[in-house]
Length: 433
Ligand SMILES: *Cc1c(COP(=O)(O)O)cnc(C)c1O
Image 1 (cartoon, rainbow, N blue to C red):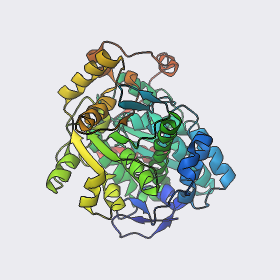
Image 2 (spheres, rainbow, N blue to C red):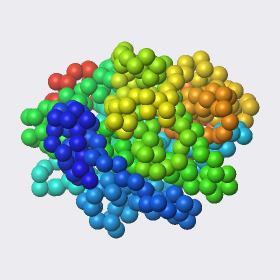
Image 3 (cartoon, rainbow, N blue to C red):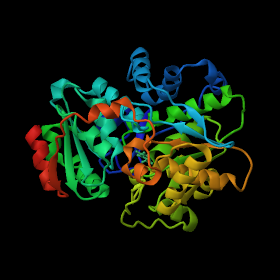
Image 4 (tube, rainbow, N blue to C red):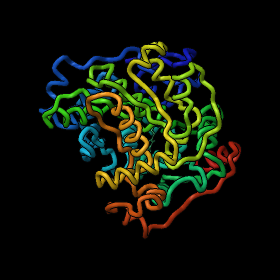
């Protein structure tokens, strides 16, 4: 499998090179030259397969033989070594709970897979590897956890000051060792801009092997297909074969784009909903045809406070930029903080299910969609409620607190403060190089 740049001004590369590069030099995104189709009996066989084997079959064509089958299967098993339960919430709506991994969010899947690919691909002879990642909260913890203690690799995590929750900050700053947490005086977009500048800095790249762990990296993006198949397996074994409407709380659009990719390969899905918060550039684009960017707005679902979703260009590629065809399969709505709050309270009271703010955006969009049609669906519950301080303010509880969280409380926090200025980041990277 070869990957091209969505800006079409960089050489085509293999999976290995795309993973190592992170982003093409022309600042586009890597995209597979062709979309593999699942074997004809693959969907029918899902109930017989375990999670690792499903993951392996999905990812294998994308890796194109650059990791030996046996090793790749092992990486898949380590990546999906936790539960992905599809939990009924109402009669027609289920939650696909993606928060049973190490840092309690779906990003654990991509981060675990990517860290293990980089371990396979990096060459100790070419010097230190520095992984740089900008996070609005969830990415950093997942990446830090995935890379912690990996020999020869340093991880630099940029997070916006005062904009990540208590639990997220603990997950980012308590590892130490090869994990460097940087608290940036700015928002997520500022962090992302700093990371992008570093990745384009030729002089830095001469000193260290620098790569990104943001959701634009193919090794993080592609494995996010796995749990859509796990959901389908549960729909099949649960006895009702209805093709679902799938609602995905969306910020940078990597997660939903992976779901659509799985669908293009053969996964039955009736409709996708990209459920956004007040950062509504995509809903407005699908309505007006005009892509007008605005500054990011801070919301309750802060992992989705993204002004310009990088991965949306990949969604467009999947439809050959045919927006009419895209709108047949995908709709997008914007859910306000007031609606999010109301939904969290309402779902707790009606069904006894505790939502986090991102899941609440997904639930609201799905219930609204199903109100005008028959059928059923699921939304992605993308993180555990305990990760967001607002859950306690709104719902009066965090639900059951997972062990991994209580263990963090006693650990020491370490981070470096920085202005939202690339010069300072540059110095920092050179200091650890
Ligand atoms: C990252 C994140 C999202 C948004 O996912 P994208 O792939 O950026 O669209 C949604 N919910 C949570 C909890 C997240 O951490």
